[in-house]
Length: 634
Ligand code: 6R9
Image (cartoon, rainbow, N blue to C red; front, side, top):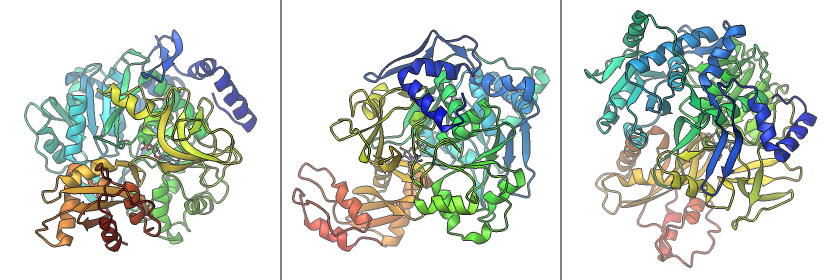
């Protein structure tokens, strides 16, 4: 399964295009199946209907845990580094992790969880989060992890959409110097969610929480019950390859976030295959991904990918700037990290603190570096290469999405020659194409277009939960017989791919996907707001910032206070991660005669480029553009 030279890469790529079924069957043979498949692949992108390894039976946790016990029971599976560096870190070996997952799986069963149930997980980055995720998978329950930065309203929307019956959370959480009241947020969410019959609450900060009789139970009490029942094992539920494994919500250009669905067999194969290859993981290496398990990167490259390969995965509870901007480098030195997978926004933020935080750190164990979440600018790429990798660590700039399940276009560490700013080449099994607006394929090199994929891979999303039509229209209807990524892309003269950013109304703020329509809806909930339009603008650290144009005909307070109220409103409705960076009050928005907001113009003004606004003759009221230009925020 592992490609270790560029010649092998080229051969594997060729085979994957000519004989895809044979290629993926060979990859899948590296996993443990209770029963092998009847068909490798059945598909059409029209409905869409994609099935990988149908007829096969498996449980992903047997691949992530049980199969390593014979030879690697005592190998560290998870190293956990707490928010506060003076608190003890924890190591869970594969044996210990296996036992804890079984134990908690039995807790879930005691609390009425069954195969097919949807379980919402809202927890800090502690080992129990990984344990909760794996325990769901163990019993065939479908997990829906919600990132800690989302509001009660966002959680409620997700719980209702998936009709969850259980929530797993913690009393509080530590993040940097903040103490976050997680259970409180859940309590606010649950007011709207009668489907939830049980919440299981882990003790982390032991902050005061309300515990409602009949609904809320403590994690620790439930573990004690399982211990007294004297039943430490929990057999892994037999799952069909195409049974749902999890739902993860992500933003698009319209409407509320949608629940991207991944299934057991294909997702497992794809997460494991990509992890082993991209990072060239070798036994004994310590691998550290700085993402949160609340995002797809955490699902695939903290939990499922590394554990399926018997790797040692480091989980970090805190933030890169606490207690100071040297924290990531302290962690590398403390735990002898060999592979570091992080995000451009983190690198740019640490660059801003200067080299003092890097210069005395022992980074000699590092061998490979990775980047994900947004385009990496050349300056950040070189800083990482020079000051962290000391020019001896290959950097893999990995392009992929929640919907793709795993890494798609990327260098293979030490195998693919890299180029700053380029995700380079597709992994074997991935067939990217660039198309023009009419869906016509743009062939050859030195070209730009919209990035699509023309053949399925095992990690492709199967549906959006509860709304298959939305999946079809969002990803498979823009261009016939193609999966549309929403990204623009350049293929240079060497055939290397460079992702240029979203071509739809999705923002990428610090690597987090945020829909402009979602933010507009939240702003419009503010009682004085009549209308708003949200666009992105280049931001030195976040990559993109959120720029909001807001119409308030009758302002009751000072503009400053009103801005704060709007920010508070967005925090409440979506969560702090979607807060606008700039709010400009305007008397109206530039609209076409048919009432469509001309976002192109608003984007240019937000970018500070007012010289050439293009054709404004179709506007209903061209004067408004002049006003907006004059009032633009620097
Ligand atoms: C894994 C993840 C997906 C969007 C994607 C693209 C952007 C991710 C990138 C990248 C340039 C990279 N993106 N990786 N852009 N270079 N290496 O981030 O998933 O949260 O769903 O975001 O992120 O725009 O479409 P997700």
